[in-house]
Length: 311
Image 1 (cartoon, rainbow, N blue to C red):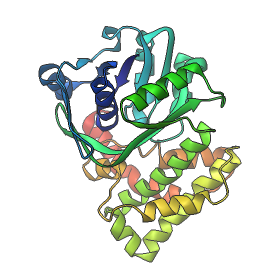
Image 2 (image 1 turned 180 degrees about the vertical axis):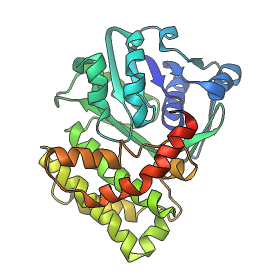
Image 3 (image 1 turned 90 degrees about the vertical axis):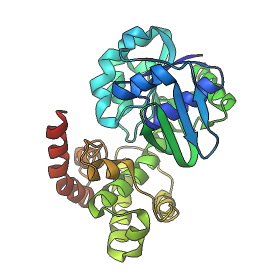
């Protein structure tokens, strides 16, 4: 399968490297020093589950230089999806489909608005990884997994084919019965943890040790669940408790990518995570006071980061 990976950072770089290592025809869409390093030295993967070096990794800056592909893994930051979507038309061939792997629940619609709903699947992933240095991806923990599926809930040849490709590469992959439920369940976890952790500026263990901050996470989870159900997402009973259990099971030193971006003064996924909860809740008249507090508390830092980066 010919696969384009849009965004060769911690997510796209890891999964793309595993697919290329397994012999798939992978082209990376990257930029800056990371792009130059991949072109010059290949893409290196430093992983707790085994290192890899894609010596002849193909990497381009412009999707038009990649040409048509069979599948596109969209792994940019959530706030960049709408920004890059128009350029992805250059990757489209007769059967091309797109799988977003962002945090959040809005990426499928954002891609569909530009590329056509018939070409877009829902998707998510779980991994702790980042660019260690240009050309090097560090997978620091957690067994990486991907999940994806048709937005209408059907099983399709294309999703089954991609599932087999991932499994042949040794990646844990699945097609959930309801991809929307799967995406919202991840959204419930990552948004609540990321937001509270970014405000508190401490790792998971310190958040859990203080009843008041631990309760903030629990309240944030409940708000996302309420918004999801009001929007017709069939979250199972007990989803909130299971999500809180995931938070309680994190390593004491665990931090979230959005938290790290905000603490380092970089543009973050604040609007696509906590901002999205507030927006989507308002549309169905569901109050989201915890997420509204997180959004208000972090917006000054977010806007300063965007001004500084020119975003």
